[in-house]
Image 1 (cartoon, one colour):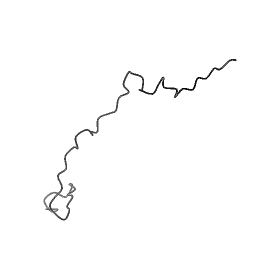
Image 2 (cartoon, helix red, strand yellow; image 1 turned 30 degrees about the vertical axis):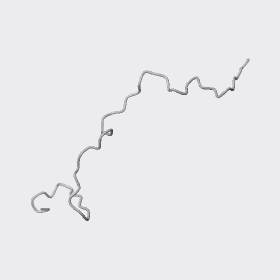
Image 3 (tube, rainbow, N blue to C red; image 1 turned 135 degrees about the horizontal axis):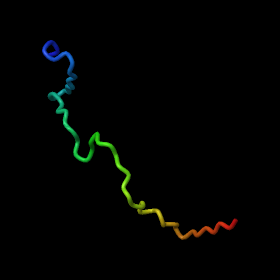
Image 4 (tube, rainbow, N blue to C red; image 1 turned 60 degrees about the vertical axis):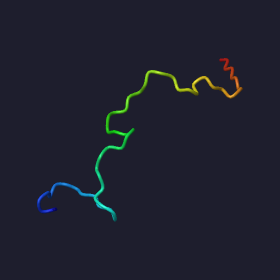
Length: 53
């Protein structure tokens, strides 16, 4: 197999060749920054700060 495809990588395990395919929920696409605030943006846990200058 390595003689026919010298530029490829094959992954084997004890049971069979491993399938090289994307896992659902993960990809190589560029991550974007969503235009929204995180859920904990205004959560102060009962603590209020006042900064006076």
